[in-house]
Length: 439
Ligand code: ATP
Ligand code: MG
Ligand code: MG
Ligand code: MG
Image (cartoon, rainbow, N blue to C red; front, side, top):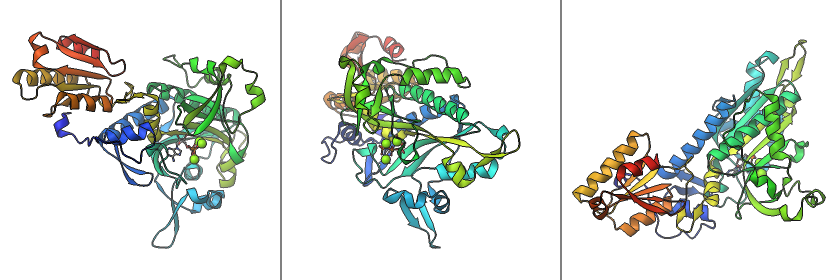
């Protein structure tokens, strides 16, 4: 992409309404524009990162054997009346009447709708196990929408639902989700720690939230610092193996890590003092086993091996796709701007032409552009007639992992300058060598 032909409305001033760094940088880099409180338009740069995050989530869910689908954002209130949640949900649910005076709502979550789909089409244990998921917009009329996309009212969520014959099978589905979430967050360059969370009125303790440590996080968390040394990495996993998935769950949940809702001071005190941590975190996902709560109230049953009708065991599992942009920036930035992890960066490399209009510099930039594109990489070429300082500031703000700077002086010696956004280190090298490093 040539910057002169792109739409990236960078702001010079820091918008007064933004209280935290990720919100400030997303506005300044022209990634989002607020349309109403907690509702955003995704401008091209923000949209690109959003799509990259979605892609990782899709790939990892399908790797785990989960099936993608899509449900509408607008729902009829009928199903919610059936489950009993229409009254219970409260003012976070946006309720709407259509022209026939029917009660509608903008879905805050989809347990009812997916359970209805399941009961309409599945009748036998032979069709199980089954996990369906979607990535779809949700609406929650949050009391305090704030921090940009972190706590929006309209936000993008991956929500998945497992249907299983037995509790054991459903817990395997739970573990599959835990593993696939660990992989997803790591691919986004994030450490998200599974922490025991509160299951609310449903009861039981089969729920974990995934938290990214950050001072601006809204959750208070308590953990054993040893947990931050765990990495899933690129180890092979067989998602059909109950033992393998269970082993990962045990490994990643054996250390103390809880949100304030489930915090147990006596247990916490048993951790060696130098490893006790009290910090703040951003909830970027949650997995939940809730048994037969919806299948019983909504009659989602299957015939088991004996022919008897039994309610299915279910769980629901969410990832905050749009919130993740904020979380990634909170975890990866400096005072000049964003530092995108390679896995989600909107462009792989920036090309800065120090002397636009100089035939040699223009040709060298174009050649670099073509060479990177030929390797399947997407460069962003700053071909504007701007001073070098402004071009560097923009590149630093939008945080691409690499910048290649091209100017007549270097070209006389056959070199360009390659700069790593993360380390700030620069080196001079021939253009072909720069391309090789970026790739
Ligand atoms: P929170 O505690 O932050 O209100 P939640 O527990 O109500 O979140 P879930 O129902 O668990 O949210 O939804 C799954 C994921 O969706 C959350 O882990 C979070 O990452 C994301 N999410 C929830 N509410 C919002 C929101 N208002 N804006 C952006 N993302 C959100
Ligand atoms: Mg909430
Ligand atoms: Mg929560
Ligand atoms: Mg939650």
